Image: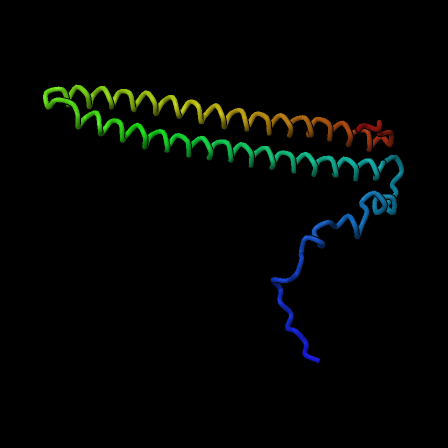
Length: 157
């Protein structure tokens, strides 16, 4: 019987990614009981923090995607406008070309500023959403830690 060689690329590592199958933080926390300290609540708080950080990363990724998508659209629009400008300059009378170049340069500069403002607004919005999520979680975590230290955690969510 022929034995096939082990190929690491055929290994499904995703089945190893979820460590919660192998250990329950809440059960482990119960093993280390400290008077006046709610270890299970602390473990739950840490789980919520990890969930919040996952959501933060998702928001940051989506914000980056939105910026990249808009930048791609801006480049396409700029190429189209450049082709129109070249055509307009070619069709203009020689004595009008200098004025047309100045007009096109002014329009291009104004479009550049508008695009920069728009990209800045997209980035600011994405950052604000992500930071609001983190700020909310930090505030909640501090309250949870305070309650856990007192041994009386109010069940939330």
